[in-house]
Structures are given as C-alpha cells and as structure tokens.
Length: 127
Image (cartoon, rainbow, N blue to C red; front, side, top):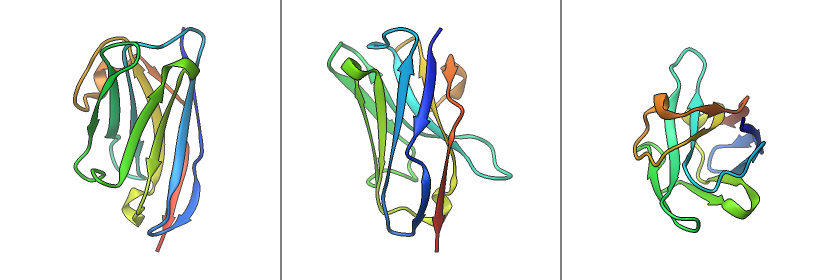
C-alpha cells in the first residue's frame, strides 16, 4: 500500500509563489504516474499537473491549460517525492491540492486512473 503526504500549502498574495511537496511511503514508487489535482469550494476536483515515468530517470509531464507556464511538476524517484512549483499565483488558484499516484504510465488528467490519494493541503491566494 502506498501512502501519500502533501506539504507546503499556505497563504500567499497574488503574484507570489509556493512549492508543494508530496512524499510517497510504503513502497518504492519509481515508475507509474504522479499527479496533482485541486478542488475549490463548491467546485469539482480538477487536474493540475502530472509526471508519468517512462524510465527510472525520465518522465513526461502534462499540465492543465490554466496553469501552463506558471506551475512546474517534478519528481525525484530516489526520494519518492513529487513537487509542484507554483509561480505567479492567482486568487483562482485557491483550492485544496491533492497528490495522487497511479500504477501505470498515463498522460492527460483523468483522475479515475489514480489508485492512491493524499489528504490534501490548502493553498489560499489573496488579492
């Protein structure tokens, strides 16, 4: 069983930056896909970014259009971590951010392929 724990959320002003981290424990997770999703109050959960490993060292990345050019996902298989660097944050980025992991190589933002989910971390961007 894989456990995911997110950290790094908080309150930031518009235009600022935050870095979210997700640590996987329970077993080594050097393959598969790791992603970030978010859910704002009253809205459905939406895809943010994903990193799909196609070797032990390389991975493909996908981003939602709303975060392209502002957010960067990266993963460190040696540390079983995935991070989300968020720059130029906007109030509409306010949400609970969830880390997720899937046991296969997946592109795109289909949440149904993910097998494991973290508890989430709150990101609030003020005007």
